[in-house]
Every structure is written in C-alpha cells, then in structure tokens.
Image 1 (tube, rainbow, N blue to C red):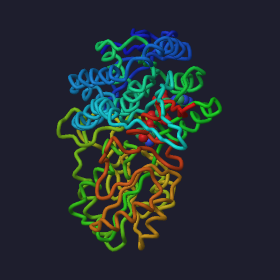
Image 2: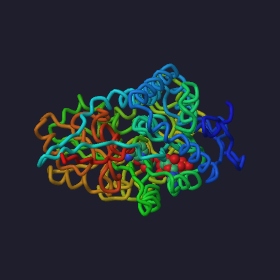
Image 3: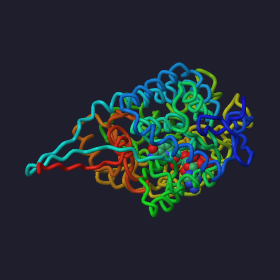
Image 4: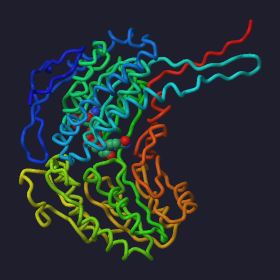
Length: 482
Ligand code: NDP
C-alpha cells in the first residue's frame, strides 16, 4: 500500500522530519504501510492552513455547509466496502463488524448532523419588553484527537458537527489506525472541500496530540481516548481556557435482575461483553447477576461465549478478530493473570498459551473471549478498565447491593439492566451513576441523545444539540426598544 501522508492545506505531504512509523496489521503482524512521524512543526503547518481557511469557511452559509456534509456522506457511502476493508486490516476486527458498524455509522454521522441542524429551533426569550436571541459562531480552529477502536466512526462523529458549525479542523487519529482518516482526507480532496478546512496530522500522541492540545490558536479540543491521556490533555488545555470535551474510559456494569429472561437476553449480554473483542468503551465488562439465577446464567453464558467464532478477520463467518496490537494483548493477558492472582477462576478462555486461537497467524494478537468468576467486585480486575475480551461475573442478593456494585468504580460511562419488568428497569437505571443506561438492550444509539460519561469517564457531552453547542460559541443578544 502507498505510504500514508499528512493532509495539510489540501495536499498530501510527508512529515517535516521525513521520519515514518510502521502501520501493522494486528491479525498477522505484517506491515501494511508507513505513516509520517510528525511533530510540532507539522501541527504548526496544519494550524496555519486552518487559520487561513477559517474566515471563508466560517462565513459560508449554513445551507452550503449542509450540502458539503451530504457530499462527503455520498462519497463515503460509495467507498463503504473500502472503509470496511481498511478498518478490518488496521484493527483486526471482523469484516462484517467493520461493514455493519464502522462503515455504516461513519456515513450516518455526516448525514445525521446535516439533517439534524435544520430541526433546531431558533432560541428566543422575551422578558420586560426585551427580546433575547442566541447567535451561534464557530469556535475557530479545533483539534480532534481519536482512538483506535472505532477509527472513522469516532473521527466522523467529531468532524461532521465541527465542519457544520463553521470550524476548521486539525485531526490526529491513533497511529495504530491511520488508514480511514487518510481515506477521509482523500475524500475531502476528491469532493473539493476548500483547502485548509480539514487537515490530518499523523504521528504519536505525545508528539502530535500534545502539540495540538498546547497550540494557542486551537481554541477547542474534542478528545476521545483513555482516562490517563485525558488527564494530560485536561492539564494542558484547561489553563488555556480552551473548549474541552473529554470522552474517556469505562468499566461498565451489565446487571441481570432476578426476573431477567435468560434465554431471550443471552445474545444481548454476549454482544455487550465481546463486541469488537471488548474494545468498545461501552462494553459491559462486569456482569452483576442476582444470586437466584447466578448458576443458571453462568452455565448458559459460558456455553454461548464458547460458540463465538474467533479467527481471521477477513472471514465472513468470524465474529471476533484480534485485539489491536501485541502490546495490548500483553496488557489484557496481564489482567487475566491478575484476576487469577486475586482469586478468580477462568471459566472459559484465558491466556493464549493455554487457550490458543486455531488457524490464525502465530504473529496475530488473538485471544479467546474470557470469563472470570469468583472475584470480589472491588478487586482490581473487576474495577480497572481492561478494554479487551475479558469479563468478570459477580452475584448480588439485593437491588441496593447491585446498585452499590454497579457504581463502585472510578468510571461512569455506560451500563445496562436486564429484567422482565420495565418498571424495575427504569428504577434501577435511574440509580446508576453513568452517562447512559440501556434497559434490555445495548449499543442502541439515537444520535440525538447526549453521549458522555461521569466521574473519570469524561467531561461534557457529544451527540445531537450537545455537539452543535460544543462546536459553537453562543452569544446572547438582548434587544430592547429605545
Ligand atoms: P489513548 O488515550 O492512548 O489515545 C487516544 C488518542 O490520544 C490517540 O490518538 C493518542 O495517540 C492520543 N494521545 C496520546 N497521548 C497524547 C497526549 N499527550 N496529548 C494528546 N493526545 C495524545 O487511548 P487509546 O487509543 O488506547 O483508546 C482506548 C481508550 O479510549 C480506552 O480507554 C477507551 O475506553 C477510550 N474510549 C472512550 C470512548 C468514549 O466515547 N468515552 C470511545 C472509545 C474509546 P497515540 O495513539 O499515538 O498514543
């Protein structure tokens, strides 16, 4: 494959240093291509281009920006299969998942925001003879920093509202998954988006990400990634009074109340546990089950998990591919080991030495879906984010105990409750300390709703009007008759 280049001011260019980083297929360990190893100089070039493009883009009428979003969505839709192939190659995720989730949602993000913005009412308020209205202006040049698990899905979730509201962009994808950000850059060039409006700088987080966050002329940062990195981003950006959106890690609970209809919900619980090898920030990695159904659940769950087809991501029948890298596999395995040291029992899966995945490259970062039971809900394994195909299962006796366990982590991103009684589902959901709770479903997303976490899972919300607000400065204009 051709080397990936930075996209700055409408052109594809090498890093100023001319250094590169290898992009590796995690399912085979083979090199795919190289990307630029950029630094502050490249970020500066991208910011210069963005600032030069800002006045014209900011004053482009909204209707025209909406048309641009539709044009981008159309072009991406024509390349949906390529997006899926590239995403599968870069991440090791199954091709069917990349098609149905990554490619489909990336197109949908552009279409959604293009349509949604027109449904927003103009806000006016009148009081004491004065009329107030809210004027939206672009923030300016914004920095978008994204992780490797859902590369184009998450990048487009930020790019679409940022462009729509008149901002220019400097984006930095994870260096592990550069291919679809590159495809997006090529698409912007093909559709003829004005030069400098959208720029991509590839490289390592501490070089490129940090240079974006600390750049004086980048007035807003939308960051999705781990909590530890989020802290560094916040520490840099907050004293500069930048607009800041932080979508961070999670350790989400899947709660089965005593009346949960196990046979009906089992596939939902399996999906919540192991979609994308558990590498979705919303995956339920701690399963809390009422003691009266615990044994029955474990038997059925382990049986269902053992039927997940793990293997070559390009195989249409594969349900779970590799994890993102050998380093990440090592991290996930260290948590499996920790789980055993903390008193857990591996019911299925485990270390790749003892539970190897058959018929895959020996250089691939494969793991079997792993279920651990017998751990205290307060153990490190049950409360720290693993972000891999590992779940812990715990029994509870009362709803109060389940609420305490569900809320007993430093995170608060998502959760799900499974019950035959919708009233109980509502009641339980309202007691969960998270940004989103699903009742009898998982990853069921209406893009108009607020998305984000509490506690160490983040600050701020994206989605619907929250994204439009984040990517706008709001001015209240108050008019009184003289
Ligand atoms: P990281 O925090 O490691 O990286 C996220 C992005 O930040 C990458 O592009 C990374 O670059 C960059 N980065 C690293 N260091 C810095 C820095 N000092 N300044 C600015 N940017 C930097 O996360 P991962 O890529 O490992 O993604 C997994 C994490 O993302 C999990 O914790 C997961 O929960 C979270 N996540 C949260 C979501 C949410 O919506 N809340 C959704 C999806 C994932 P590089 O890759 O080069 O290090």
